[in-house]
Image 1 (cartoon, one colour):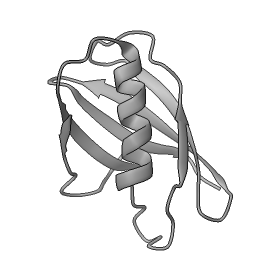
Image 2 (cartoon, rainbow, N blue to C red; image 1 turned 45 degrees about the vertical axis):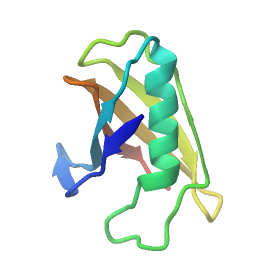
Image 3 (cartoon, rainbow, N blue to C red; image 1 turned 135 degrees about the horizontal axis):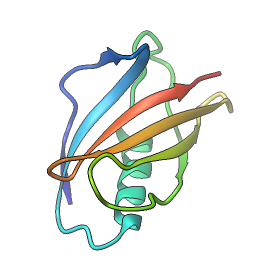
Length: 104
């Protein structure tokens, strides 16, 4: 699987949108989206204005379906041990939108 890395971080509805990720490959189950979101949060997510925050672990719910518009949640533990919550939205063309929904 490959993915396009985010080129910018924007605010949408007052939430920090961390990334819009293009995921290529054949998704055969909802678990594929869950696993991709977990990997992306751990490997790629950075928080604007918080350069020292990293996420050594992330756990996501399995989405109910694979269709665009489906939203599922993830929880990540940062390098200080604090818990962050992310919303992940499945978009067209195997893209996922990862947004911070709750922060410590």
